[in-house]
Length: 279
Image (cartoon, rainbow, N blue to C red; front, side, top):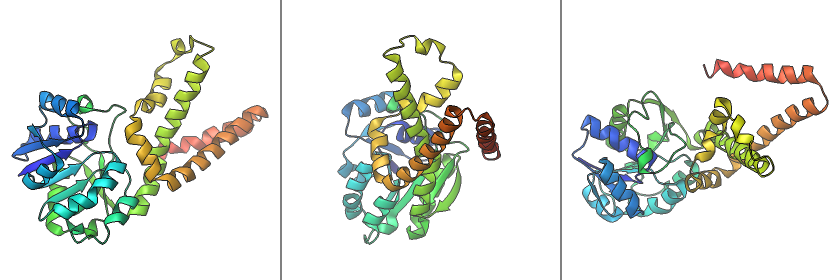
């Protein structure tokens, strides 16, 4: 079985590395708009050859889409027009708009909407790492719309990645990811912009940056090419979580501004309840 990785960056490359380790497939084909990325992926060794998307559809049983969600939205109808028994696995971070676009496509059953809840702040083929997905969650979205044989192949790949699984509908997925993933990146982007603005007048500010700052702001190194489309495609949910986040920031601001430290203490103590979720 040949597998095509469409988008040879962090996620696609990490999938390919693991499938190479387990010898799950005969050949891994790389598809990417960047020749530089394809050359690097071949040099690293996680793809065997490069191909166009059209050729990959003809020669590969499975196509794994790890390109930005805007690009997935654009190419998926054309891909489904060309498939027969191939399996298309979409690993994008948003689902509603994509799935709405193909809901009535005659080849919808060959499509698996899956979201691996894993990643780093780095991008490109060099960012791909072994073991990225181990123990993490793979979310299957509207899996009941996928043909049984296609789902079995996708789930076998998830097993190779050593991931746990759960099932959601598209709206549920996009709401949850807005709250546990997308807001984290927006907060990190905002903090980075805040500190960079202060650096203009206080050039030595980063001399004091320790591990707490680094862990909070590290996501600000994430690719704008990836995250701008995510915020665009999940706009309504992202705005909802941003509004709540701004409200909580305002509560902290007001408590400090009014020297209401009892209120501040209560807010911080309430936030500590996150320990029930994150150990």
